[in-house]
Length: 119
Image 1: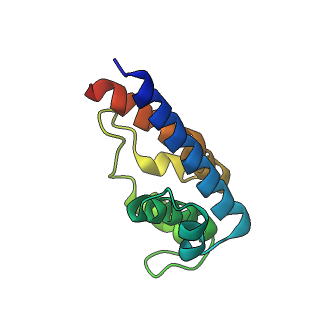
Image 2: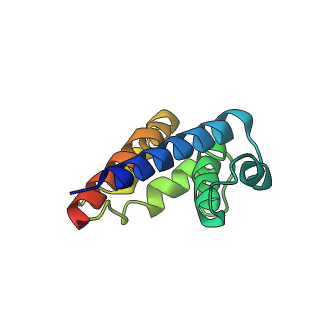
Image 3: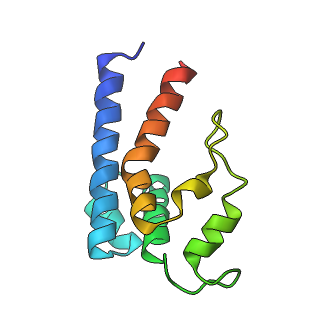
């Protein structure tokens, strides 16, 4: 069972994740700009959010292993599953909207479920 302080911290982290991800997707800021705008994000957290946003930004960009980033993710994420589910991550790469929705909603839900089962 989570304490109120743990719930508050999780809520703050989620809001910061949504704000930073949304900003990166809309404004196409650089990593250093994100770190300056959200100093409460650790270097690791800001890099993680930036890399997630970058996959959406580069969706149709040419890729050295496949025609574009989407094709590469479809191929390479078919063997990577959400832990404990068997659901391949490639399932969320069929369309840019689906991938974005997964980053905005699915990833926080998966993280919440993982945190609840860990306790």
